Length: 388
Image: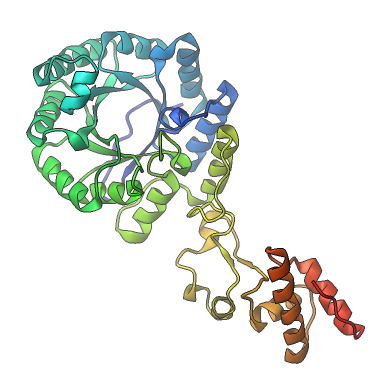
């Protein structure tokens, strides 16, 4: 087990902080058992996640014990407690035995008022006092800025300065309500990067569908860490999905993460099962259908050169492409499916079976199974014709 702070060794390597066990579990109706938390943490660890935001210890003894167990279960990932900016929360984090804690404080005027802060000066004073208190208990601390996207920019700069002065190693910028766009996010992080040498993390919510784009923009602007959740699980519309951010960074920039892409499908399945959520068929990276092809034009191209219609090689994720027989199939798909069964036919026979495949798919509103194609072939061999 390693509980040391994992540094980002170069600007090209982006740290991944996964909050599935904290923010993800806050999704409506989601509740993980201890066994499920351990299974998810171990799957995150195997996938190469740098940090696991494991829970909120002030919730009580059961949560403290769960965080402690998670810390013992992981081998490379670092487990972290999530806390409010209070001594009580710091005490609870200390009881877990974990060495890292993220202390969150409201940064927008609206959040300050709602959470009983006297104002900006109270926030800055709380940062200085509670960070010192937490560090005296041996905790390495990061500061999270709740609702940073709606904070006054000058006050946010003061918060970061206070965090740095108090000994924090990182500031997390939270787009708590998912109100940012990528262009604004990039400009914000360019400014923040010019103001501080602290690690900067972006935590994006997906209320208008921009969490992944905003995370990439934050990194382009200077963020060193991405806060994510498996499958985008989280409050309301959820968070930036771990699998999308990790893959998109590699595909669209020179940056990378420690994530093992081949571990992503199993990780997604583990979280889906524990959360009771079904993975949408077309979910990027891990959806069942994202490497499935039916269109005749696409299939014909793919069979000659996979790069014609696949920007991502399914083998990167330990997966294989599927040629689906349906209403939009062409002759190439029929020949391919039969050859996989060791059967060769001429174009005339293939065209007859294609007509039957299309009719069957339209009648049943589902793909045509290989066994059904074989039945069409057998009927053709005997001079008969099966109908949908």
